[in-house]
Length: 435
Ligand code: PA5
Image 1 (cartoon, helix red, strand yellow):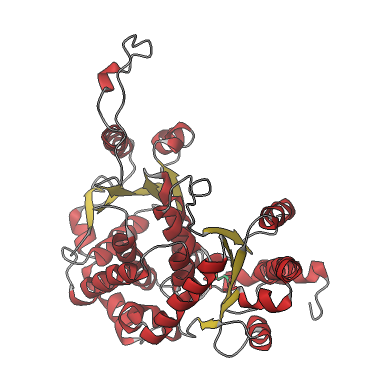
Image 2 (tube, protein in one colour):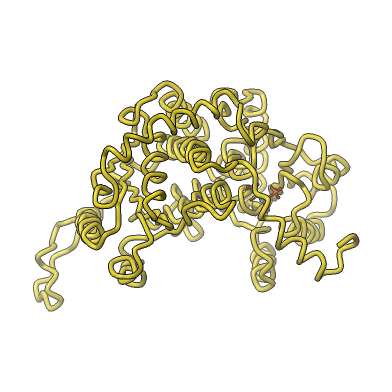
């Protein structure tokens, strides 16, 4: 059942095994703060039991709404920013074909809005939506965030012009607070089906609520398997105490041990390009949870081998600031071997019949070896394959490790006071009343 293995064999240049093992009491104490809810941020611990406590009636309603929307749409526009879209996008992009847009075969294609204010983006989006039958999932926990609110206005106006107000209303689902916020009010007034983001689940921990589940189900992926993966990982995180048996505690321990030795940056490194949004989601999770009081590892990411040709030089020989966490996927979904070319002008015949995964694995091995010898500590997370089950495991693994790691670092991992600073300035510059 434990599909995630954490290998810390390549960190021992900077820290010793004893340094890591000595973290056990601290990470165990952090874990127990999560379980007992007796530390800062304890009003945002709803995610800890989410996979266990998911409301089956809500799930059934969600699946019925998804079936209804699928029947009338070739496209779903997911409107949200930060935690209100990154979790869904991570799972969808990890599972769908890179060319899903061109090979839709009747499956709804998911597009995103509300995560940017790029004017060209919206003009292109509306032109695309002109030719599609589409529905909208508008997602905002606070219901007051500027980017998704503005995007919803723009897309709703287009939808109402295309289908008329009544049909447009049947094509919109709102996911927001149970009681408050402008989005709640708009949805209640217009009669949109509504789903609730629980009060005690922060945006970046909300992928296993309707925030993530509805778009993922709409894209055709198995949300029950996702939840099963998360549930199984939760069991491990809850029941296992020692660093050897609890991968989330080990990951939290090793990154804190390295941070204390002066590491400032953690790069999440993966080979399948489809995992780029896993890195984006992880960056928000760790950056927003730990980056406070002038503390915390800066989360960054690399895609192998693509970024080795742009960032590889810095990682190998630049400032010694970073650790890397490699996600190693054991089994690819497909195999593409290198074909024979009789002329062999490119000299690649020595690779004939090797699959790209075999080549990528050698590139990854070679990279780990090179970076370790260049003084970069490397942690490896090994997963069997990329599917709904392992993604569910990864989600819970990273969330749990994040809570433990944040408490071990000595911050409240569940607030994000710094996010408000730019908003106040933007509101003043825009002339918002009261600013
Ligand atoms: O993690 C968080 O809480 C934030 O980054 C939010 O996800 C983001 O700001 C979007 O907020 P909301 O869902 O309230 O629109």
